Length: 389
Image (cartoon, rainbow, N blue to C red; front, side):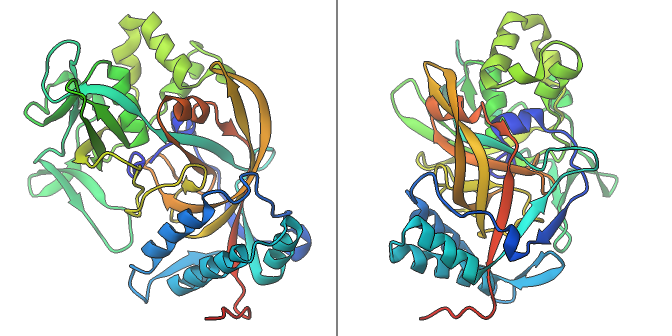
């Protein structure tokens, strides 16, 4: 999950995350349905939907999700995905598929537009980074990733978010912040692996998972295990607020370069983010989301699952960058079907959607440019639409 999923926060959206305005999940009249078309020509969609079905079939049969004030059983989500898969199997034309969806589904738009503002949603990207690393501390590998410390406590209460902290005088108090952990050397002995650059470690904290290429040529996967429970704070937003950078120029590459150019500020800037992530080893391979299922590039999204039911079918309408030589050469429409398969500790409220871009440097470069307006629509099969067995 990103950050708290692998996968829970987004490259730039996590780095630029701001407060979320009050929002509502609103059912649309049919006259306001979008035109359902797919810019990926349905590539990889069936595989992504199979992963969502595997998850939904694993939850207790009585599981329900609150959608626009209505209790939505997990079985309804299963039927929504299954019916859509059957539509795809018939290889309809774009016009036929659009009409079939219009006839068979109820559509909900997640509206995040506060009064006086034009932005409805913030669509961002995240990826699975690949960094050189080591299992022991030796130059140039001097910056650690940590496993879950023994004094971290998690208290769960029903369906509420868990309380994370440490035990003190019989109760739970907030766990140490990033600054306290790093300047106080409070995690000695919990080192999992070592990286060449502190910003590489920070990126893994943002993305939630990644792959380490070891000196002997082998690779090891690292994956989110737990967080310190502290609020995520955007270093990109901090640099903008303090006049160090302009909002339009903030992305992963520019943030990394700023820290290279201003090494005396690096520690102070990274410590603006109180959130800290702990990892465990995993098999290298596909990124795994918060549902415990492999993610599909371009088809899996991370969201706040209190607003977006896990495994649900979503239609995304935004735009994406086209890159050449590390630069954006144009922007193209990004209108596609995706599925909710991840989450993140910085993903709060309905106004954030993070699209999984894939693994490696190229995916990271493109994902890092995503901070776009958009619209997000939840598709739920109508109760009177029969799913033929």
